[in-house]
View 1 (cartoon, rainbow, N blue to C red):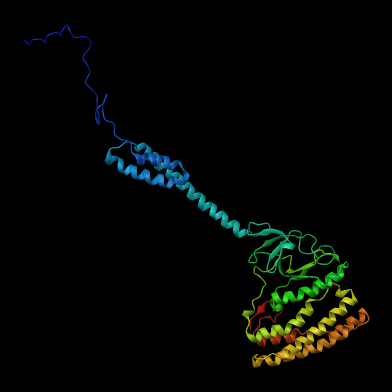
View 2 (view 1 turned 90 degrees about the horizontal axis):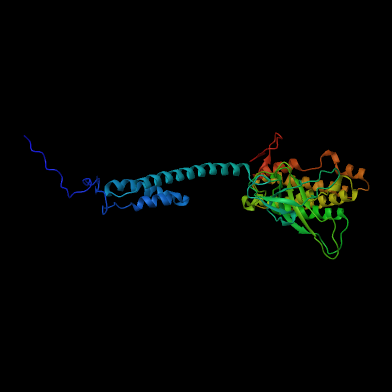
Length: 382
């Protein structure tokens, strides 16, 4: 027979104390040790929330996740959160950079400025200097029939010459004299004469230039005591010029070619000095004919004096000089015409009033570009 255990002592009170709970790191209770918190995990979450430092937060989070299982520290959740947030911020920033860069490239190609370029600068005609390319806010030329080519709105946008542009400034000059000029026609006549030399300084070989209007901006009248006497000269077209500067570098030609271009300059300058009133004003027409006679004769003399050109070019250059001399006589006769009808009769002797054929042959022999013989306007290199 089994003897039962003795009854509990009368001195005990309450139920017996439970056994202490045991956790993975020992007994839980007062005085039990706590594992340290991972500093890398904390830093990972904090840095990931700072957008500019998110990549560093991502890296620290990954490092913390690798180290925590081995060092027994707390903070795995913080490291996971830091890694997730940092990775999301980095991915979003990368996406924005790619998309934004593509949009910027497209905007640059299409043109971000008012006239098709992001590198534009607002200004006026008075700000232009030689070599500036620009587009006119109000259009380059007057739309009123019978008016001259003076722009009425001076507002322009200065744009790079290697992009779309309506016009290109090639020089400025001041009207002659200190006296008052109230007649616009007198100012226009000076403008035509004054812009022509600047044009040939800027682009000596006018043969190769694109079709464009030869124009300028000038004061309508000038007082005797001051006022703006500056004329601003440019080439332009509403359809736009080629996407490159028209300025020419003399070093591109050899000695013979350069001598030829210099010899032809007096004749070319006279041609480009033709006033707008040449078709209606006899005085303007006869004055221009006189300049043509002098310019042609001077060019003929300079052509004959050229040394060092190839033997194959000597004949064509001499033929051109002879033609210019003949034209000089025609133009001189026209400059003395007493009536408009007589002027036209003297100017158009035999219906052949230019030297383009002889000039074409001379340029070809000298190795200068010429227009296509088929007449399609294309240039061809000899």
